[in-house]
Length: 193
Image 1: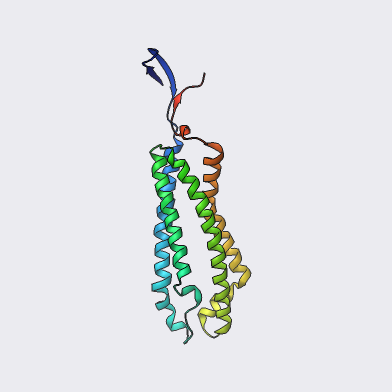
Image 2 (image 1 turned 90 degrees about the vertical axis):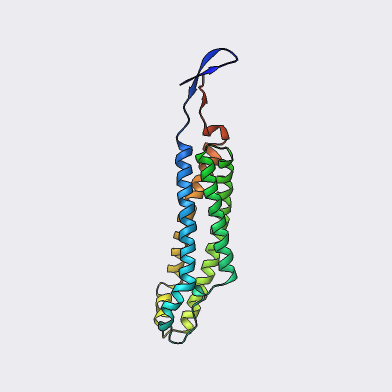
């Protein structure tokens, strides 16, 4: 491709716009929206639908801690939704080839990493409370199911989920922090001599 340079009245060879910003932007929008929608549906199901479904199996026992709405759970869900909303916004900005998309992706990566680590710790504590609840009420099927995997099994599940949650933020840190380090990388420009 060439562009006409009006100052020198010559044709200047240019590079075409790279395709990666649109691809990264679309992936970010999809991942962010999926996280918001599925996370919200999961919380609604866990807090409002599931307790009614398991009530008959509790045999008079209270709901396990992982099925009770708490301020900490609500704070975690809200923080996750806000961070993923940042990802959607970063995806739109990157898709439109705006330099702020890079900064927003880096902010998302740091914030989601913090949220994931804090959330994993919170979920581990909640799993331990649920196991203690299961030991207090061993006669109902919900307690037997909750204690079936044990603490080690639940910890492995939490760590695997956390690793999966951190895959895109780690990619963003590497891509935007080490590979595409400036806003000019989102556009073509004058070809190198």
